[in-house]
Image (cartoon, rainbow, N blue to C red):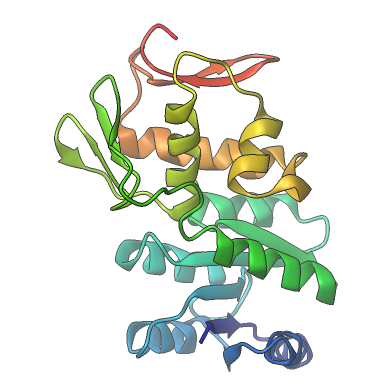
Length: 230
């Protein structure tokens, strides 16, 4: 049974989210602030599959909640909610570790579509029993969903791992943003470049890219590739 945690200090918005998600057949726990959400997340048995959180809440903000969740769990799907047109809030949510975002006023069909995409992304490209992939000093095991660089384990979120995996499957080639977005998020995301840019930025940071040693390379006007000298 899919379990979803909702955090929103707006009672009407919270009830709307709870109703739409419950009507889809999912179990929903809805709370009014970040601290309550954090406690629900920490002690959940079984754990939640998806977290939806407003980014602006009193006390523990949604951004702080996402950061705490990511310190504990890189794999759970997190969707940030912000007011329409608030690009700063959207970017802050993605930078904190959200996989996706929603804008208010919320659309029921869009909400359900994004949650379903988040659930499908649990193991986006894995093939059971497939041999590990190696590019330079990066090794990814598609079955175990683990990634190491120079032997050191690196914890990536579902979306970050999906992006790195897609690039590794296409090592030596430049792939367009639309190709990555379609493969990792789904065809409806082909224009969501900010989501992709933030995921790549976070993956690079965790991989330790920098000082001219970036293994994920940007090709302006073309896309991205993986591998030294690619």
